[in-house]
Length: 287
Image (cartoon, rainbow, N blue to C red; front, side):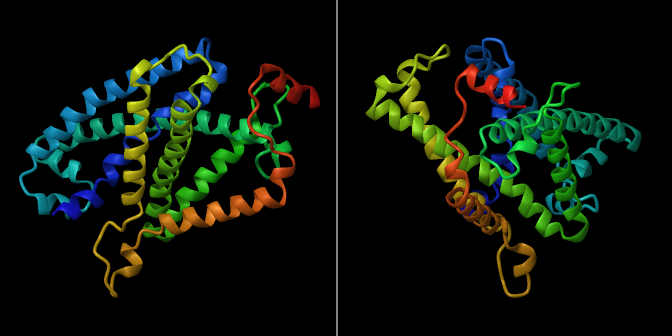
């Protein structure tokens, strides 16, 4: 039972990541050092107040757990809704959920596009010059946007060929984000403890709670990172291919590719992110 709970927490963990999307747009936000943390905390609290009661409602109104898990829609929540309302009302609820998903995908597209542009602007990606090109008419990184959309479409098409591969890709995002969280917050925690004088003053500061909060964040990220690599079902010879969690294999493969690319090329032209406004101006002047 305990192992089942620990392995099954991937669905819950995936809801905890991605809240930093607002931070990726910080260069476009006024007073970002103060506004972005407040926006992230507000979003988290609002989502918790909406999602937690909904989850409890679905759980406590599930008449038959086995039937819900084996429902033809593969979504237990829809099975529960069918016990309480008519099909038209279920359709309305699902349409609202789809619209919310579309809206969130637009936000993610903007954030990922901004990340791609910033990383390519600093020459940290292959084909950086093309990716970081700014449209002279729209004044946005159109190429980075097109690349993000194409990759998302290609990854979605994997579902047609293999559901196992598709879920490996989706769980890979959680695995990658947790690795980024543990690494970035860990570096800040190290500086807080060993070299506190080197950190710049913060507009939104945790004060004396900074070290404990950072330590708990790193600990939880590493804990969740470990369990995200586990398969969701018991492995045996007959179901190994369907049950295996390939996210860790893909993650390590991409990591090796990134390290090789850095050693071969990127270390000669990538020198860390641009931290000054003048650095961004230089990029545009080069165009």
